[in-house]
Length: 338
Image 1: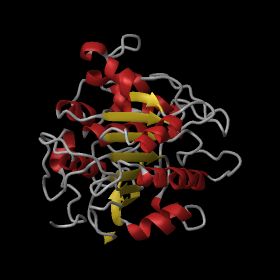
Image 2 (image 1 turned 30 degrees about the vertical axis):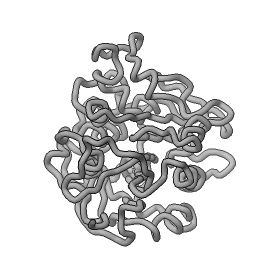
Image 3 (image 1 turned 180 degrees about the vertical axis):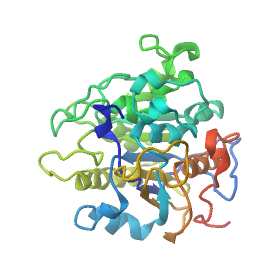
Image 4 (image 1 turned 120 degrees about the vertical axis):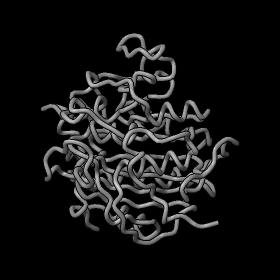
């Protein structure tokens, strides 16, 4: 990231996949041993190294999620810094501009999972807990009840949908002023100033969440900054998971084919910048998969954000793979065999 936005990157990628079900479009089919997914909820935290997570600072993640999940012991982030990881996770590639967290100036005309879902007739939303506007290409945010977000540059780095020309701009032409109806409808704040996750929680309660839900906690709850009253960034993200995941599981959308994914974008940048996408360049990350479709347990395997992208493409039955998702294998060994 740039000097301001850099502080919003995540150090470790913890990737959890938990379940949410929904009726499947008839055209979708499973690929590579990955079953069909219903609703998917991808929750991303920031800057947390795998070895820094302990029962003392992440009791829900380690004490509740891990025992019930397919826990990937060798999952890695793709690169450093944050924006490149968010872009890699949704388009299978990143640029030098994105690697340096330069925000909306890095927008690209490349294929991405949001557009793939559109083409397949599916639905998606980006839910920004700290957001105050739809299709927000700015970096301002409000983080009540904690108070103003302590970080800037957050949405241009942690909100990848606004970086893709075929999603953000009207008629596929990127523009800060002439935004597409889709972006204004699907890239939204998750609540209001006094109830930051209200809209998201209401959609859960009503069972109206879309097929793919990209959930971005605010700058106090994403695992990046220490904020009052908890003053522990690891625990703040853990509390967010503890608050939201049971609501997802209790949603009418939850069923036999649902998936929740929880991941951090990268570790705490011990390895410097990656030039391309070599395995492990973004650092060791937790990855767990909790779903009615998955078998709990610990699983080894050289997986990273491109692997997760390919797994989502398979689970949604999308046509083809984007970017370097072509060059990795899907996370396929954890699922129930039918």
